Length: 415
Image 1 (cartoon, rainbow, N blue to C red):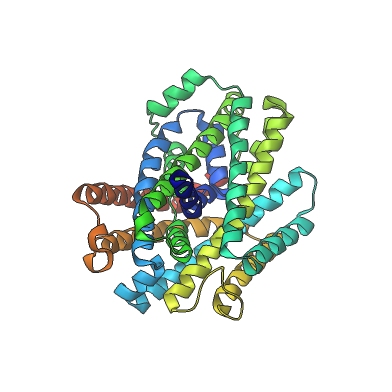
Image 2 (cartoon, rainbow, N blue to C red; image 1 turned 90 degrees about the vertical axis):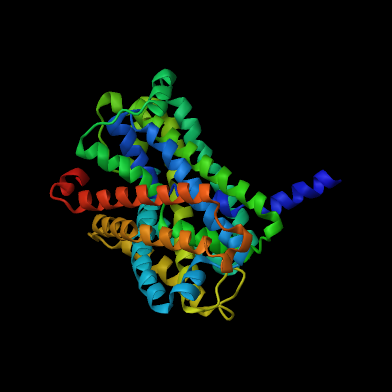
């Protein structure tokens, strides 16, 4: 009986960590991993090990703050560092997440076109469905829907096995770093880490934990939820790279987006592998289009002291619901505009996210070491060493990525 009760408690708490980490593999992330495998084979697999460690460290801290304080990260930053600091941070995040949402709708449109479906029908249809889910459903309904959809990522694992990789070479690429001092290699290395740890994740995870009302006594389960989510998301990333490294790299097929990877797989790994890859791209894109605007609505409302939450109605939390509605509507419409500079918008989004990430992480570490806020749940010395080391490495890599993205010749890489 006790075991059954403990199992029910486990089921009631898990969700935020797995969902947040899984949906980090959105259209932009899948594109990055696909390009990495196609251009450098298995040689970039090793980057996933330090990336997973860094992701677990950062996400665990944010989850701990959500459990202990019952507040979102934006809330805590406003209360401890002022409205002005929070406001400017939120403006940059709003613009960055707008670009990310457009990228996800573009991924949804591209995956639908693989199946011969018009984006002019499917993008509005997809936007309406996810708007309906969030604005009319409860937090629990939205969470269950996201968890079920997250399970579809297993399609990338199946595609990976169907591509019949050389597992000896895969293991070597995973555990033996082979660093190439080439601009594309370095940029993709940084991009893999940068696409895994993003500002919106920190805000969404803490806000969803706070809204779910997880208590201190259940923190260990929440921590397990985060660790499982971080490991699972990078297992998926691993198999995306493996699939493209096995099929596209040996034939010298260079790609610039995940849609091209899905199409190219058909003659090399079989039609089923191609279909699975395309279905998973559609799933990842629509999930990203749900959660990124949701994270945006959370942190803007928390920053300005407005009511926020999926459990609330338009009447109870009008700003929250209208921000979400506006982001979904405008992003979907942008994808439908002929000749819209989508690539430029996506690059701007990446630049802004890269610029903001170090500030978000520094605020998170300062807050979690504040005894007035965290009590006995502050970081240990060992955890602080790992946390600050992770942040310093991320700042250096983010700075390098920003320099490379704005340096001459980046347009050649994109094209």
